[in-house]
Length: 247
Image (cartoon, rainbow, N blue to C red; front, side):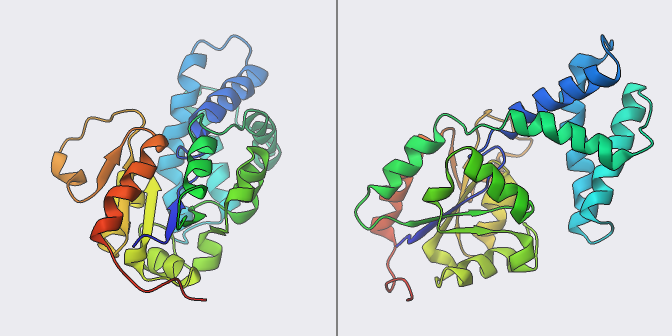
């Protein structure tokens, strides 16, 4: 039986892409008004997140340094001057980013629907972000009160997709991995890898991605809106059994 659901945060409950689009556009405009490549700034910023965050995850640089690397390459690629004080410049970007924080429209209603179920599962967040920033997001977008736990690499000692991350998260809940459903937008991190670790992975494919190999998602449930989650849970319950949640 599923006794807990862990959600990814960015692009699952929290509209990270929208906030980045706002921040990258506003910050670039502040440095170079009317920049001819302004429309490319949001996609470039997201690409550089994917490029530079793994170095922090692997322990090759600090969290602050991967931010500086992203900012330097962002400026280089757009032909902008690289700020002398990159930390201060990134702080200016964050002001714009935080001003656009918002939950996806389906998040609040889905969490409320799950909480209203008989034998409602424990709800939590499992994220590769830092605890301070991710908890601040949850509070700002009004979802923190739904969460029993917010689990980050700082508490678990590992980043997704390491098996240790998912096994540690289940242990923090006092559950076996098979009693936990993991939901998120990243096929590998939030669906395939947790399924390999013994959880039930659900891929939230909001943008209906075209996969080069459909077999990539064969082992996981695929949904396009969080509103489908209560139905997924109902479908799983008759197939699963297990002892009650540990005290």
